[in-house]
Image (cartoon, rainbow over all chains, first blue to last red; front, side):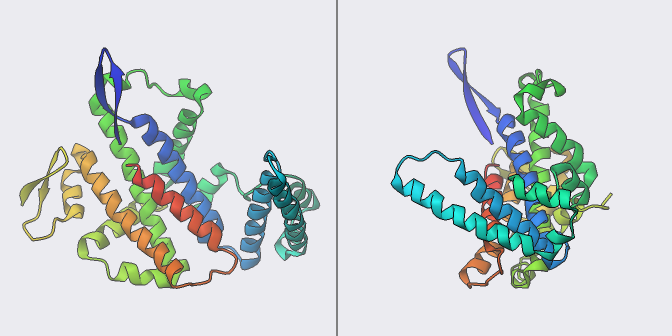
Amino acid sequence: MKSSIPYNGQRLELIDIASANIITREIIENYLTLYHFHFDNVEEKQKAFRYLIYVISAYKNRQAFSVHNLDNQQQLDEEKIVIQELTDALKTNTYFLSLPLKNQEHYLKTKEAKQLNWTDLLDKSDLQPDFFKDTWRLLSNYAHSEFLGVLQIRDYPKNPAQLNVNAFSMAELSAMIIGRTIINNTIIFPLTKDIVDTLDEDSDNLVKYFSKVGAKGST
Amino acid sequence: MYVRTFGNTNVMCYPDNTTMLSKSYIANRDKHPVDLIILILDNLNSILVKQVDILHTENITIKGWQHPFEALSFKLCSHVNFF
């Protein structure tokens, strides 16, 4: 997490808080995506619907890639057929058919890859909103340079102690996410419970602690 | 308890043969020990990797779901490894 930048003919050592912030946002969104596909306790037909729109979106996005040779073109042509097959499957998915027609058309016409936006996913997920909601918003602003004014980051380099606290907080949030992921894995994939059941005392404490602190309703 | 150095940080550890990261973390959290939380992340990440690995290596079929689960888990572990 530490990096050095050229400054006055020397190397200035500092905590790479810019990367820590960007990566922590990615870690939160990555967990929310895992939650959307796997951990969220919805019926199988809805899980299948979510998976279908995810895969169709991926293939649709690939259609926009530049073609550089005949192989590329052949692959894209083959994937057009796959898109059609997956779309046909989507049209017979009972959860999809239960949606209002306007929503059905939306999923057929767009490249929407998930059913809920990040804010709704944060609300619905099992993450502790007191820790994650505002942080995710701030980190999103940080990731988009045009919104950087929302944060007061000008003094960061002048205050190493604050940099340290910020970096520690980002790492703590990441530990909570990993803890939640490990515990949720044991629920949906029972085989992974064996790994947790055989942990040494210290590792077991860490998993339980960070999973609990990061969970909704923990404070 | 005794003091042990993690990177540039001195943390309080318990007098047994294993260093208890969990107890050191609780005892030192108010000092924001970055080096210690990085060690904790590494420990947690290794557990997650084992979980994903056992699903993969033992050829457990997750009907229709294997790809996003493994891809997302790999991405998550890689990001956490940054710290």
